[in-house]
Every structure is written in C-alpha cells, then in structure tokens.
Image (cartoon, rainbow, N blue to C red):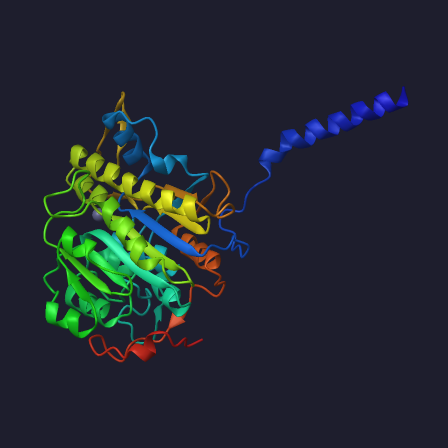
Amino acid sequence: MFSAFLTRVTLFITVFLMAFEPFVPVPKDEKRTDIAPVKNVIFMIGDGMGFNSLNKTKKEKGIETLTMNTFPLQGESQTRSSSSAVTDSAAGGTALACAIRTNNRFVGTYSYDGYDLYSHPMNLCELAKQQGKTAGVVTTDSTSGATPASFSAHAHDRGDEADITFQQLRGDLDLIWGGATDSFREETALEYGFTPIYNKADMDALTEGTRSFGQFTDDVWHEVAKEGMPTMTEMTLKAIDLLDDDEDGFFLMVEGAHIDKKSHQNQGDGMTDALVAFDQAIQAAVDYAAAKGDTMVLVTADHETGGITLEGDEYVYTSGSHTGVNVPLLVYGCDNFIENGQAIKNKEVARRVAVAMGETNFPARVKPPVAHGGRDNDSIFSPVC
Ligand SMILES: [Zn+2]
C-alpha cells in the first residue's frame, strides 16, 4: 500500500520535472569552452542566405530537403554589426572570421582602429596557420570580395581591393580561389610563391604542396558549370584534396556569394540556382566529413538579403538590400556546438569554431603590419597581449 503510494509520488515528481525541463532557459550567448574538438573545419558561408532563401529554393525547385537541412544541429546566428542593426558582408564576414563585431565596410579591423594603426583581430585562417594547419579560401565572388577578404586580409574599407589582394599575395594561405579581380598581377603571385590558376584544367592539375591563387575567368557559381570552369562542388572537393594532407588538419572557408548578389537584384531564379550549387558543395563537404569523422562542416550566412517573405503561398522579395533577421546556423560533426534551436551572436560562431580548433584565447589581438603594402610577415602572428 505504502510502496504503491511511493511509486505514485515518484511518478508524479518525474512527470512534473519532465514537464518543466523544456522551460529551463538556455543562455543565449554563453561563452562556452567545452566545444568538442575537431581536426578540420569546413566553414561554408551562403552570403545573404536567410531561412526564406532556403524555403523559396525548396518550393520553386521542388526540393523536399536540402542537404544543409539534414545537419544534426540547427540553430540561428544573430547578424548585426557594431555600426548598424543591418550588417554588410564586410562586418558580417569579420564577425564570422575574427569573432568581433566591427563597422560596416571594415574588413578584419576593429571598429575603433579601422586604419589598423594599433592592432587588428586575428582571423580563423591566421589561427589555423599559427596552429600548423593548412588553410584556404574559396569563393564564387572575386577573390577581393568582402567575405574572402575577411578571412585573408585586414583593411579599412572593403573597396580597398588592391590592398586586399596584395595582403593575400603576401600572406601565407595555401589557396585563395575565386573570380578574377582587377588588382591581381600574375608576376606578383609568382613572386610570392603562388601558382596562378584560371580555369578547371589549371585547378585539376594542381598537386599537394602547391600554393595556388585562383582567378577564374568566367562565373563559377552556377549549378551547371560554364565551359572550362569548375562548379562550387568541384572547387570544394579539390580544395579539400589539396589541404587535407597536413597531419595538423586544415581550415577551409567556402563562400556562395551569388545567393546575395542575385537577391540584391531580386532575381529569384538566379538565387535559387546559386543556392542549389552551394548545397551541392555542402554535400561534397559532408561526404568527406562523414568518411573522416574528424571534420566539422558549419553552414551559416553573414546576413539575409532581399527580405524574402511568404505572401499567400509564394516567397517574394520585399527589399533589394540586406535585412537584420537571424540566419541559419547549421553544424555537422561537432555534437555540442550549439543547442538545437539556439540563437547565438555571429561573432560567437567564430569564437566557438576557434574553441573547437583548440584555442580558447580567441578573439585575439594581433600587431598590425608596419604599413599596408609593406607587410612584414613576421609581424602578422605576434600577439600584442
Ligand atoms: Zn549584399
């Protein structure tokens, strides 16, 4: 009789606790240091890719599930810059690369030190190189675009393309691939030890241990490749193949830039085409990670573009600009990166990636070069404090 009573009390308490468990608040922006370690990171940025960019693509392309939607962890990144509730790709990229928020148009520089006079924040590629990993940046934008620049340069303004390109050439990344930029000079690339590549045949011919600078002469963002050009998937697979021989691991950033560019023009067909090409590249990265078991694939965006909204049963553009809404944060291969459904700040995404790479002292302050264009390589990685 008494034990039956005890059983009922225990049952009641259990049900009571179960009922309230979901209401335990998850700290929004906890500075966690227990992120599961990974050897390799493939950081994939869909520029301008909001939740409704995914929904519009699925509906209009008749796709039931995108690869990125199958990731075990599905959360959100809160996108803003220090100067605006709506970030651009420079400040958005800097948050994802350096774990700090800065002003719109600033690339890898502090909001209070845009000219890089005192110091600049280390980006994840620099962290990877410091750790002895290989590192690379792949984009469908030009190589001097704001997102690739955030992972490979430090500049007062995203428009300082000559400065950005020169820093990339003077730097020590293993590969930087994207569309051609006016400021690229083949003789300078050769001088600094890069093999220039211009098309898929050049890319395919690269062998491990070769540093390469990609200046593709035509678009590389379409689902179906332009003649002589690689697709995003082919670039991603080749980049992984070139980087993954290092026993210390690798860091690779891959950007699908035309999700943003096409949304600025409210060109739904172009945006969905670009998003599918991006998702296929994600599939290639996940296939690699699944086979290896030591690689995190992280997919997010720097901001949403186009204010895509459901009207009736159509996803329509309501803006030609960026918006300040949260964007997807999807993680494969790092089981405790976020709680499912959790929203964290964009800069916290980069900090957690650094923790997964074994570095809890991030964001990190780095001495500036003597002068842009006169960069002393030894100064790049000397921490000030
Ligand atoms: Zn944009």
